[in-house]
Amino acid sequence: MTTVTEFDQAAAASIDEALDVLAGRRIAVLTGAGVSTDSGIPDYRGKGAPTRTPMTAAQFLADEHARRRYWVGSHLGWRAFAAAQPNTGHRALADLETSGVAAGVITQNVDGLHVRAGSRRVVELHGTMRRVFCTHCGQVFDRRDLAARVEADNPWIAIPDSVALDPDGDVLPETTDGFRIPACTVCAGMLKPDVVFFGEFIPAEKFREAEQLVGAADALVVAGSSLVVNSGIRLVERARRRRLPVVIINRGATRADPRATVKIESGTSEVLRAFADALPGARRRSS
Ligand SMILES: [Zn+2]
Image (tube, rainbow, N blue to C red; front, side):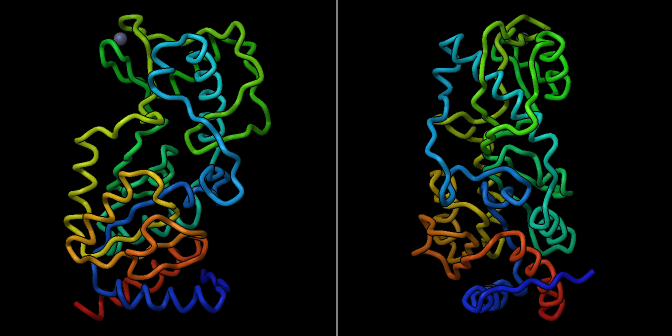
């Protein structure tokens, strides 16, 4: 199947320029919320997104009311995440890895869509909604099992047809009264989703893994991130220090635009598809 996408003139020119820059190079890819918008997960930092105050880890740990509100929202969000499907962009990145062009994906997303699309080397910088762990004994739980337990403990919990969902899987629930917070089945300790909360640091080991991926690549492609989060900009800095070309695909300005070799103002799905279609050939020619 051939996908023909109409790009505007400026985008088409910058895609050509990016393909020239990337030809024959092994690329590391950094993705943000923008790659998941075509899967129906809104980008709360993108254009027109509502402002939002995310819950901090300190609030979550200290305040039972906040924790109850978080779990209700997170449960509904998880249900919506689980129903979302990988899109053309996720699949294009998996194809780029299969063909040997992409070294792997570093993502700021917690939706797990890269893994589901078939990407094998995925560094989930901000963790994943798929797992929950005990803050006391460290036991890890599969989110699907926990979701079943939450529903068994809270049979009243209604799953709305559509929830106002953000990339962290938060929704604003209508009510949290009477919600039974899930606890660790091993030690009854407090459970926490395996995601980096607002204001929390990315685990050092995880960031090192991302740095290694950039360190082993010949180019960095940033897709669908405005690079508001510092970890993203640090990875761009690392690439620039090694004098690697940096290609940015994003609708709207990003913090690294002045440092980009090529900036493509376009949707990520169609551009990544164009990369996957064009780059294996370019790679074969150069090797
Ligand atoms: Zn425990």
